[in-house]
Length: 273
Image (cartoon, rainbow, N blue to C red):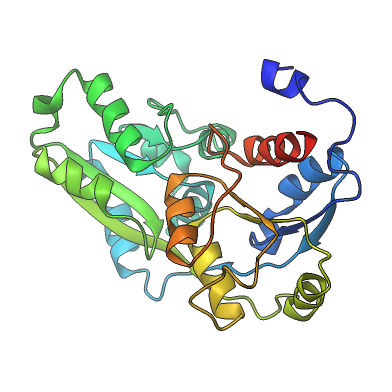
């Protein structure tokens, strides 16, 4: 048990209601972590993982994997989607044997390891600036990026800092859509709205910028401040926190490490004070 975990005694979230906005298929681990601290978890999934509008770019990248020096996976969703398409094209994870692989986040690295894909770099900082720094350190300097070819299979909409930084350092970067995040058919809005109106929500959690923007869209607002007045807002990392701030929220809870267990622990620590 880590020192951070050892600081939490008992069940600090007992009697607290926490709203989870992750995709329903991905929320089980997060809900279990929160419930371990005593929380009542209410699901309000505002995103769903869907196939890209076209597989053309991804299929072309898969057919030409031999031309890439590095493949950078920025999420477990990217891994799942890439491996699924790889199989659909009649290939398996061994197709990545000749590339260096960077995995952003422990969940991403674990999914790759489960699929028997070697991982060369796992950045300590999960935001794009930290990923670039980790790659630079591994390669031995900025000059080593020159003429390297990078493939980034990721969400159709994603942050541009990393591909831009790689390109500015002399690398060639192909960013291909491996999946999309879309609003789900069912969200549980009515239940959450009733709880919010009645003061029955203690904390709302966001695990990506798209969960913030889709939550705002769900309630048809560009200012979430009034809706979540008096509710603790928890964000998994800096980029998500900036998205929350852009929509009028003050973020009280942000873990040092951008993982689901760390976010659950940060929520528990917040309410144990």
